[in-house]
Each structure stands twice: as C-alpha cells, then as structure tokens.
Image (cartoon, rainbow, N blue to C red; front, side, top):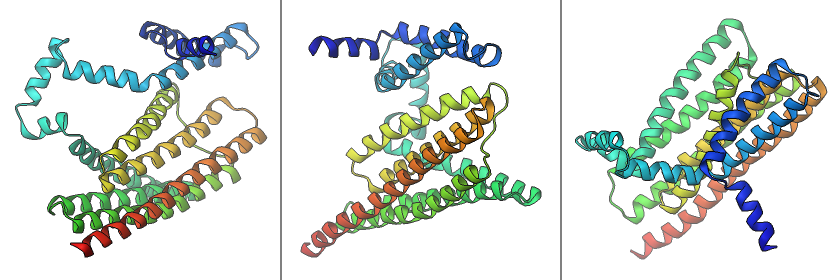
Length: 313
C-alpha cells in the first residue's frame, strides 16, 4: 500500500520540468488534434491523455506553485523582483497591497465591482438593443453580483471605522448573512440562465483560440477561489470570507459557462450536450444554493453567540 501511495504521489507531484514539458507539448497538441486530426487518430489520443495529465498536475500542484511564487516574490533570488518590491514599499498603499492580505481582498472587491458593473451595463444594453432574453438574463446575473459586491464594500468601510468589539462582530455577521440572502437571488438568476441554456440549447461562444485562454483562466479562478475560501475562513473576518464565497460562486458559474462554450466550439451531439448542461448546471446551481444556505445558517449561529457575549458585557 505504501509503495502504491508513493507511485501515485510521484505521478501527481512530479518535478516542475515534467509539468512544464507536458503542458507545453500537451495543450498545443490538443489544439492541433481538435482542429486538423480525426478523433480516431493515435496522435489525438496521445495529445488528449498528455493534456489531461498536464491539467491534473497543474491543479494538484497549484498550491505548491503559488507558495514557490510567493517565495520568489518575497525572497532575494531574482534581482528584478527585489528592485520592484523595494519600489512598491516606498508608497503606503502599494506596500499595504504587498504585505496585507485583508487589504488585497478589499482591493479585489473594488476591481471585481468595476468589472461586474461594466459587464452588466454591456449585457443589459445589448439585451435591450437585440431584444434578447438570453442577454438580459446574463445582465441581471451581473447586476445582482455587482449589488452584492457593492453591499460588501459598503459594510467593509463601515466596520473599518468601528472598534473590535462585540457590536462590530454582530454587524459583520449580519453583513455575511445578508450576502447569503442576496446570493439566493443570484442563484435564481443563475437558474434562469441555466434553464435557457438547456431549453434553447445555447451557451457562451468564444472565437478562435480565446476559448483555450478562457479555459485556463476559468480553472485558475476556481482553484484560487477554493484556496481563498479556506484561507479567509481562518482569519475570522466574516465580510471578507463572504466575499470569497461569492467569488467561489462566480468561479463555479464560469466553469459551467466554459462547458457550454466547449460544446459550441467542438460540438458533441445535441442530446449529449443538453444532458451534460443539465447535469453540470444542476450541480452548479445546487452548490451555490448550498453556499448561500451555509452562510445564512452559520451567520445566524455566530450572531446568537455574539449577542449573548454582548449582553454579558
């Protein structure tokens, strides 16, 4: 059994050069196979297996790679990075961005809000121009996502002005609970989008090689969201933890959108496409619903504890 575990560990956690080589060869080979070769070609099978292995090792080694990147960023091995870090430390906010995890989380909230608002305006505008229920559904999804981020940012600014007391903790848990309630509305929008995708057999479309970049980005967002949810659960900041839960919900929706884009690009049969979209869409909507309920229930429990502590004070 020990030897078997050692073999599995060696396969899943190979040296960095193996991961890099399999990625450099596997991903381009898969693109070539999908574009120019038949499914029965032996090269296609090899490229699919190699790219699947590369993707698996990238996922399993994500945390290790992130840790190594952090060591390089904060270490003295690369002179260019050292010079850039010293430059960043000259200024207050850039220095805080490098050294303060909570400050980075707040900045990501602002960036996410701006991007969501721009995308919401774009989709709602195009939905009105082309009278498309599909574009309207996407627009409403991003409007709700923007509203949740705006609420969290507002509450972060309010709590920053409060002292670390039971009163502040109560406010934070109320904010996290409100985020969970608003995520129920977000889940309704996601469900409507999913139903449209299944009923009308449609989805996202990316032209050319953009779909491969989108795939890498979607996987990165999902892995990063999971890691951040775990990290921020440990620092005991309910509002920022809620923000990371929201990012996880968005990442799950991005994975579903990627699946629909893959079907649009490479086909797979209408019945099979509808079946897979039904399964994946159902899982994603159920997962987001579970996240929202978890946030509401957990916040209610913590609120009860904080209220009793406030009465004792």
